[in-house]
Amino acid sequence: QVQLVESGGGVVQPGRSLRLSCVASGFTFSSSAMHWVRQTPGKGLEWVAVISDDGSRKYYADSVKGRFTISRDISKNTLYLQMNSLRPDDTAVYHCARAEYRVINLANWGQGALVTVSS
Amino acid sequence: QSALTQPPSVSAAPGQKVTISCSGSTSSIGNNYVSWYQQVPGTAPKLLIYDTYKRPSGIPDRIYGSKFGTSATLGITGLQTGDEADYYCGTWDSSLSAQVFGGGTRLTVL
Image 1 (tube, rainbow over the protein chains, first blue to last red):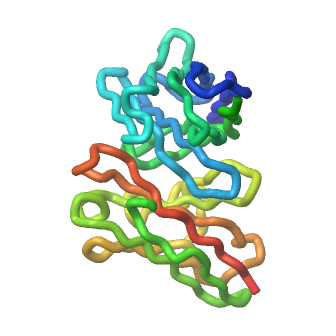
Image 2 (image 1 turned 180 degrees about the vertical axis):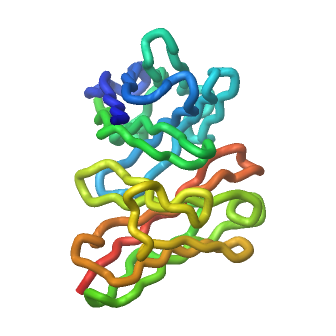
Image 3 (image 1 turned 30 degrees about the vertical axis):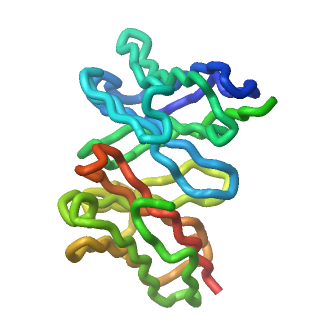
């Protein structure tokens, strides 16, 4: 079955960087667009970024544009989110998700990695 | 403030029917497919509806989706206590070139 496992979360000071990873299994990774979505505890879902199946197209939420970079390594079945210039309002649980049928349909989700930005 | 507008909460008795609305714009719901997600607190979201009205394998037909103009609706009939969760709508916004979600609706089965 499809499995998505995030890692790399933790506590980081404002202005510093962090890289999240999401290891995928149970499907053909190179055939699926992949998303990052974050959720502040007790709040709703906030979309962060998406990368196309071949990695050629990337889109970002305005709140992270210019600071975050989404990428993927097909050879490692791994999705990444490089987060720079982190701010306290980036504190959230970050989920990776696999798109199916169309890029907007997030068919499978990981359990998430908690990122806390605090001094 | 979310790009898609949902009611914060809805409630109904077991066995009854409930609908959850999701209001967007021409550039979002008006010209794109809609998906719906269920999230039980403490767990990851689960896809309930894709391409506006289609159900993934394993989702019962008492759960359905529809769309009219710039608004979409999730309906659940024969409510069960296990349906208590948060529900989110999502779509692509062509003017933003971004995926957008609604703020979520908490369903309580009384």
